[in-house]
Length: 521
Image: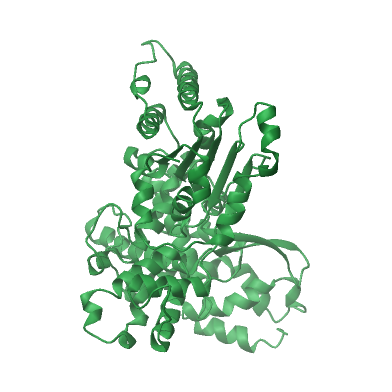
């Protein structure tokens, strides 16, 4: 049984956590596969449990780290493994700035921490100069790779003989996973448990990939009631508390982090002054996401982050600040333009969004400045921007046959309701900064300091004008009296969305022409 646990895991254990057995049990079954063949493993000189790599993917705040900590502390893991290690890569990469994968110095830093966790001296892993003055960049790269491989092999030998369960948290670049797969050079058991927001398509007999879902309605309500102090897992809530919890978890999009923050808000003195039934549901989403409300539920600390902080960190994979800003604005513009009342995350044609982004980057003077940097970052066109948003797990993607043209086309959708809220706040801040730049000729970044509905209305109006410009050729075809069959020159997307864009852009004449055109079916 492990003598001690990393403090990152013990700190999570102090909080109430849901078991989520529907995810944890299949993972444990994979880690302990071959249980009925232990004697064969031993006879052939093989370690049991066998080498395993488990990758859990999911959006920010979905409970990946909590799941990893819960499994690490489970009875089966404690009995089968001697030592549990924990490394958070995301925090280290953020502290370095400008990188999204592990460099040599960062790797050595991680190895020194691992040494403390397994109880050995870290003296083998202190920085040393591995370059000569005349070494060129290619030579330096080759030496760095060699030094990393040597350090990895040394760590494998230090671990050999111990049964290690290793949690590698918040991985941004999946190429880094192999740097911590020490089990390939070990004769004893090794399990690498990886959490990441990014998609991982790798697969082998030794790997298991799990996409962590949102909480169920029942688990969300239970989580809120216990965290907010309205009940416990052993007592039934009142009807009033149950109804309240149902509404709040729906507003939180069944995201664990959002529910935890909402439950803490409900315990503050500000809300204790009024009855629970008067809880301001209309503003709950704004409260749980806005950094300015952090003091309402607990003192600020490094481990206490708002939903806005967490969602914003999802873009940290794009390490160049200007490029990250441009990608955020593209994402926010998609959220601001392609939504309807009661349906904030519809499926939209991918090519329409990409054409719209191209028009936007060419039209706003303060965004034109970022285009050369997008090229330098290998995001030379908006297809690349869409691909990286998909890789980061911020949008969903599917292929669908069009009813009119019968063509197979790709559609995209913002991944979660709170991500839509995040995108809306991005464009509010973008418009606010754009106004500040115009007045003061000063640069600005997305700082989420506020903004107003007027900011959103103003920028949305301009963005809807841009998308109408993108449709202009199809608009002419649709509203042309000479067009015998408008369905041959337009698709379902235009017919569904053009009236909406015209209304939002206050194009009254265009709306009238579209509605009364007798040639339209």
